[in-house]
Image (cartoon, rainbow, N blue to C red):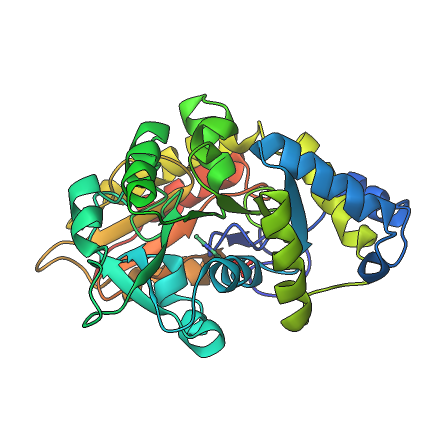
Amino acid sequence: MTANGVAGEAPPIVDLRSDTVTRPGPAMRRAIAEAEVGDDLLGDDPTVERLEARVAEILGKEASLFFPSGVMANQTALATHGVWGTEVVVEADAHVLHWEEGAAAALSGLQLRPVEGVDGALEPSALAAAIRPDSKYVPRTSLVCLENTHLASGGSVVSPEATDAAAEVARGCGLPVHLDGARLWHAAVATGRPVTDFTRSADTVMVALSKGLGAPVGSMLAGPGEFMDRAWRVRRRLGGAMRQSGLLAAAGLYALEHHRERLAEDHENARSLAVALNALPGVHAPEPPTNVVLATSEKDGPDLRNLLNFLEKHGILMLPFGDRTIRGVTHHDVDAASIQRVTGILAAWAPV
Ligand SMILES: Cc1ncc(COP(=O)(O)O)c(C=O)c1O
């Protein structure tokens, strides 16, 4: 496709709306086509089994399960850990709170208790203050949910030490910890730390295959074997058990083995994009820690909706992210040359 929909007349669209927009390339499609499959609900799809074993190994957990989406994997974790009518402590801008359709309340009778974090990290003292005391006059707390990288703060990395500190507070109160690690791969690559450093103190972890890693579908939930047996039933209840899902698992396996290390390129491209956005008058775009670029119009700064329209006319897609902020997310299908084209076009923007 081209920017004006006419083949050959304009350069290809640069789609920076999200890292979920990637299309499988020829090698991934071959892996899908050649996948050995069975009926996963009946427990005999060998490719799904391979994916689940591999993800459990990478994350340092006993077992993992393949899900159609990150929301379903997160909500299965919440439903399995949580107790009806209790609270889950979450960071105030967490995905589970703002972008999962009220699922924790609607599906599991859980109330989410938001706590202001620092770049996505829950400070131990703030977390401790949010965990309810043992009193019959207030709800009980049943779970602490963390997010890494933290989307709303621009793909911030929460360090393994900050994760450990939050988990220690939770554990001290007898509470389990779930980690929404949709983009945990980015945290590992950005810091050069093994992914297990980030997962070691969480009881359960969700990771996505369909975001930075570029698989068409799928997220994983990993945790202790006994927990995952109970999660299997919740996934079934939510309609997330699949059949010849080895076709999708094959794409996930391919992405895990071939697309993790290259996330460093996405981070580099994100930094270049932020520099170009930050150079616009009245626009602030901090250096991104990973692949999410946020650009905010300063007080009396330009209307960034105008910038989004301008970019769209040039075949460059980004999204509004709140009132005065726009976001661009780099990914597998956007190379350095495309980012260079974007930065050139940004330099030509004249705010009205
Ligand atoms: C941090 C985070 N968690 C969970 C999800 C949900 O994933 P999905 O869209 O696959 O359901 C997303 C989606 O973007 C996300 O960014």
